[in-house]
Length: 217
Image (cartoon, rainbow, N blue to C red):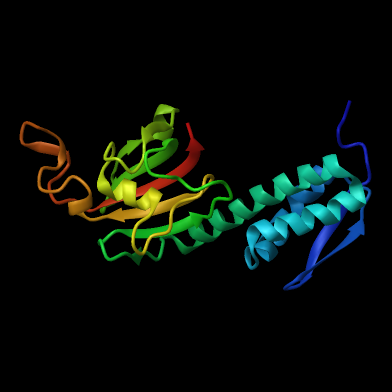
């Protein structure tokens, strides 16, 4: 039995703080797929959680609670997609540099709980050298990294970049952040993966990590 057997409603942003709705006979999922980027762009200019709550409430009055939950989930996905698309269009992040020297750029702001020191979490990542060469990727292995954050199980740049530090806000679950890690917060003068005079990560390397904080393990 199809869960989409109802008349969906299309919400289109008209002004900065207003979302107006009109009925439509087409499939809700198909309709949202075609229009989600416009709605997400509108929400991106506002407080995400509050906006999704308001939109969910409007949809619930129009199409019922079950459908409103679906819409809210799709809007969340659309918002994340819009942020990622914006980052891709820019080609590179504009890093904010903390007093520690750690650079960060949020590609997607999460909507879940923030990471706390000592918490066991899961995170996907891609690690690159400054020349763009990928030296490691959890995506390629098909499994996120599980570790206790903020207690030295990973390099300092990761701990500070996820839990937060002076000038760096903590990541929220579902968020994606690009980190630019100076040598002193990475592998320093030793480098890593060194054998026979060559290193996977050469000494004094600046590292670039795209980190996706999935949530607690």
